[in-house]
Image (tube, rainbow, N blue to C red; front, side, top):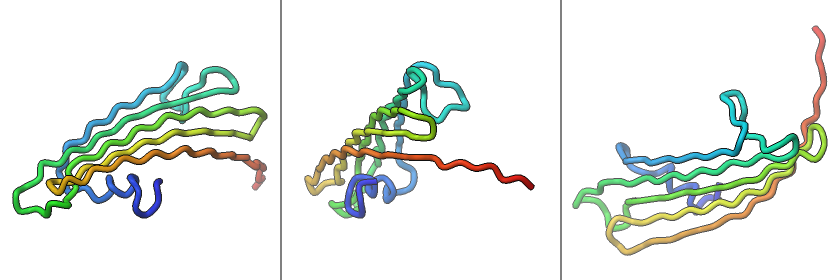
Length: 122
């Protein structure tokens, strides 16, 4: 997500047994079968927040992972059939056990997708 040294990596290497809090929000029209909620025929959006807290022991390194947070919000537009344009804002934060290290990072990402479709008869 954020590259090899960014916040996306922080969550992958958390010790086993952490406390994880997650909150997700989506716009109007969300059903179980939808990947993204629709505001109307062209626009949809979603947002989410996650926090991971670890209870460290005295024997761990001062640089051991202690806490991480991640939030994102996106906006999708479908201007024509089979095409989607997306903008997404992501924020992440990591805190170490006891060495005082704390860092935040942000990312703004834009994506364009075109779905080529064909029917195969067999």
